[in-house]
Image (cartoon, rainbow, N blue to C red; front, top):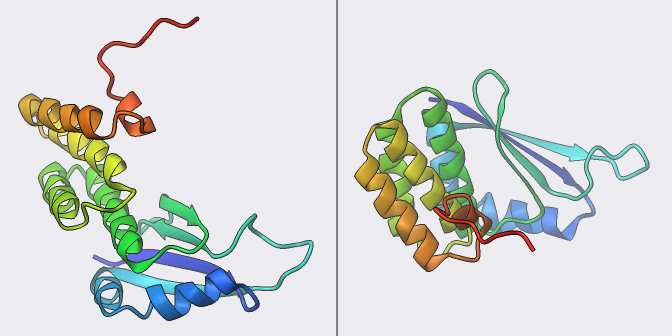
Length: 166
């Protein structure tokens, strides 16, 4: 499986420089990219025709070019690994490979528990369970999401009861 990873950066951007030096050169990230991703790095010219609001901008795409994930700004290696895995999980879900997506997300949840992306990971873990026709697993994961990350937008998506609007 070769997915497409596009990183747009500026030569004079400190976040872009950090992304190149710290994130993309991290051994774990290099291994993950080499095993599953085709990497395209594009340097932009700063000016009024600039393509993005903020740099670096990272796109993860499937083989047809559809966007799986997009993120603006510097992403540290620990978070970048979760970014890559969430993108891969999206790819697997779209291919109806629900069990494989669930396995990848569960492994990510356990191994990267300090990531700020874990609420989203739990949300899609529940989606994978639901699409794999495992309602008990879905309920368990989404309960965990509501209990541990109740203030996140991801927990709000799985609320069973909503407070009334004022």
